[in-house]
Image 1 (tube, one colour):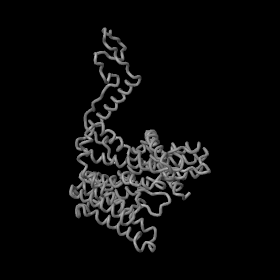
Image 2 (tube, helix red, strand yellow):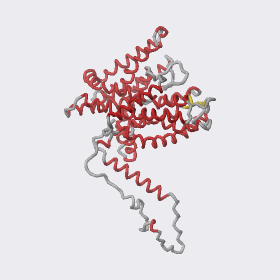
Image 3 (cartoon, one colour):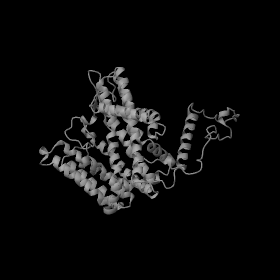
Image 4 (tube, helix red, strand yellow):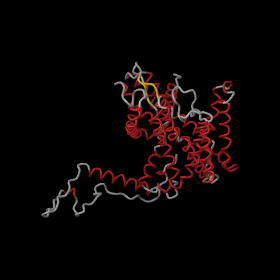
Length: 462
């Protein structure tokens, strides 16, 4: 994924000395020198500073200076709205998993997956907001198409472009699975139940399916570009049409005669739909009128599928549910993606203007720079809190059946803790996103074997 920091302007960014007072004393004296002025008769003595006020001021000043430096290094040609939409979709992934994923604690002391959606079906609309993979694939198609065309214009090959993109996706995945392959035996020796380890392993690999699908669709970028050049926005119509046909077969009058594996046919076209829209958008083959059609048509189809055809309301899987919308995607997922993509295109200019503010733009840059770290490690951050807590019994909102309103309130309080743990984990694992130029073939082979072993364990094959 492209990052702003890889496209720096020439010249140095403005900087502020950390030793220089950020807020000058109005009387002209540096308050840090401890000088005292005589207080005239009748004048009120100066108010004492709060003990941490100067520290807070310096921290805010440093944050502002860092945001200004990031803003100064951003090329004027950078499409901030696209980066902002990507960051929003990225943050929705851990937020959804942290909010709608829980654990039960068995009599054997082991953790098992659970979800508040099993007890609170009325929470399903939250998943409509947090399921933003459609927007992610939209901006992915947009950015990939532009990147591919630039590479070809500079004389680069399609194969070289694809290798670079796949390496960016593959390195963090290999890193997280290899690390967990080492952690499993260590945690086993430490006395963590095998069921807990399998539960955690399932959660770790859960987001990684997306990376595999995204990699396959990325490889089809040249095909998507040619389809857009020939058909315009209509290039996405066969994709949503094929999903509709498969859903008709597996949920319609002949559902009992259809094999369960039929749903796998929706995997590629279901997620490629929004990606193709992004490619069309990048080529100006999809404008505001088309965006309004996507928004209105997506909302209408979404409502019809829920009210008339009784699709499950949740956009994420619910333990014990007979039907699911997301694995693989159903037509309801595409209806939501269409509406979200239309809204994103219509709001693009407003988002771009808002992100001209350094204070809003800097977090977007940081999130985009850490995209794969967030995707690959956010479940590990939650497990870093839940697994140790399980050794002490039930902890509301963390370990225990998610069946009460109190659990929901407690889980909301735990989310900042998960976010902090993700920052800590990310500082150590951020290097997996960088090129492994100094890593020899032997180390890469060992990492590959470890990753394969962990994947087999997580999928129950070992």
